[in-house]
Length: 194
Image 1: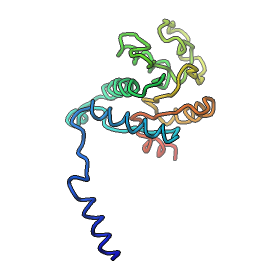
Image 2: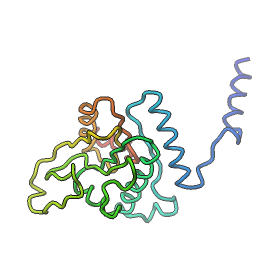
Image 3: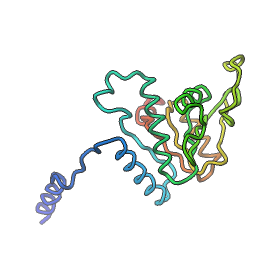
Image 4: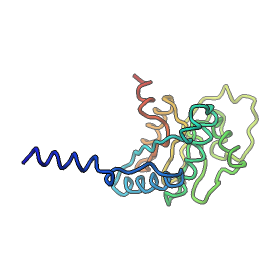
């Protein structure tokens, strides 16, 4: 009887109807990611990871790191709109925030309930990204964590291993707010830390 049950399970796994095909578009992929994230949040999860290629497979090999970063920011913003709460789409620092703002035509809140946010800053201004900050002195200021008190959740995008410690500090300071790591390749980042 155990062998028959194992064979039945194996048949179910290989049955074409039980395997899901990849989504036909990034729109469908994002919808599935939003639904899965909402279910995780409803189940009480506080730390979630969403991971998928930011560009179609045929474009990935030739994509520059800037193109990948831009695609990830755009996808993270679209993803955040579906969560149904106030979301801070957090990039690593003020420099990344400036690049992200360039993608949105300078709008820190390109969608209702979604706002771009710098996780850290060395020169101030992350709290009010629309304000222009002179370049002089930016490189010599100390980096510090900047929370988004208005946010109900964070979507962290473009993170490197350096930001994992800052994400941990954010988690401690922001209590029960969910942190959603979006296309950050956490498996690789953890490896960088040893």
